Image 1 (tube, rainbow, N blue to C red):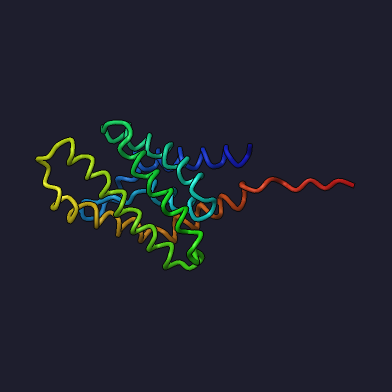
Image 2: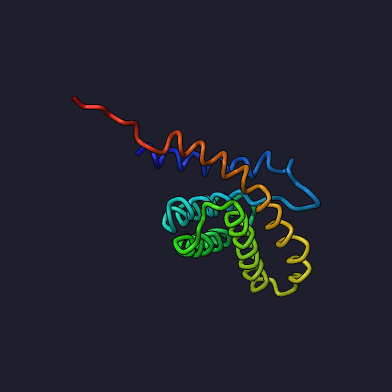
Length: 169
């Protein structure tokens, strides 16, 4: 039970952080995507199921806060979480460059998926300029934060995730 409470609190905290104070991290008009970081983290640590749970909860927060139709972020993050969870079983995921690369590719794929849905709904949006101006820089910016966020989340998970040891005599 403790594991689920810690996970839920981390996702809710990340969502609240992303919708409130995260604006202070805006750099050249783009923001890092905290949910992509959490989805990739849980995909690498726990597998695709945990990543997809994280994607559903975090994507719901993003959809509601972003004033979009509910489901755009959820579906994009869930697909990314599933793919990263499946691929992580075949990679050496302890290397920091692999983690950063996976976060970059995940941010890129999630952003492209989201823009693809938006383009289907509104074919007049300038999709190429949005990819160049928002999706690629946001994926790069998100990947730069990977070591810091993964380190913080690992400390929290390492401290609270495992059940306390009960010694019986």
